[in-house]
Length: 373
Image (cartoon, rainbow, N blue to C red; front, side, top):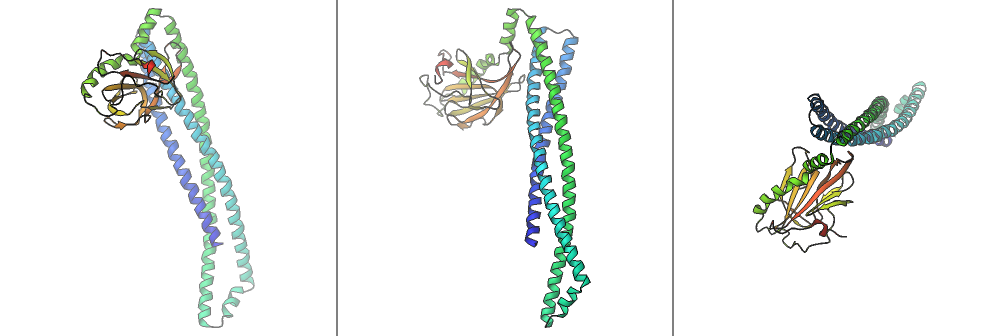
């Protein structure tokens, strides 16, 4: 019986540890969502000011695009929280069921103890047990045995009380998680409705612009146009770089730097590569991370890697997995694909902009020739 009690205590401790870890994850996810909601609220105020001041359609579209991307990110994080809460509700239901079974087992055990104690009291079994000892030593041993039995009974009764408290706490947690899950689903639906309204508003604004204005807007918002100035500075810094020095303009048939990705379009030495949400971005060749920049407008990252005196750039990353000056291997993860809004459709997509540059600005490389066909 003592062994059984120890097992039950160990199981209850494991439940508590698991529940605590899951609660920590949920609370962390809540903080992420709260920060996104705060950011979106600020952008909504800025957009309202733009409309009130009758700002240009271009300014409003840029603001709407930023809000659409943030709202999509919030929906993604909220969906992740729903998965966590659903898993916690299911786990809590399992814990409650097992705790209920353990409580029934403990209560039956305690009931039997009470019945046995009553029988012993009624028939003076304890006194008979003690007085039948044949020596003082045996009497002492029997007294010790009775004390151990008494302690065990007390432990059983205490454990019943503790388990009842655990059952009540688990019921309260389950009720709380179910309420959180319901509220989170409600907020998710609300955000989806607002997102649809943002998209429709942006589409209307774009449709009012001329083809020339739309082209100019896309050009202004195309992040890859800003990479050339950074490359000019980096060429001066990587003279004599040995990491990945075997790379040349003859190096071809490399893997696309987005796991599960595909090239959407080529533009000279650049390629726009789309992929699934959360896809890993990898270095196409061994080299040295010579710079990591963060775009102040999109809040995304650009990574520049030197392969000898050649440079590859990876723009629009949502997260970075390497440090500046790190030596990376071919195929090593350097970051995570970032989100972006397609100006033509106002739909969210995940993409990076890859660029390849020769040591001399006079030598033009084609991104279309880099990857495996």
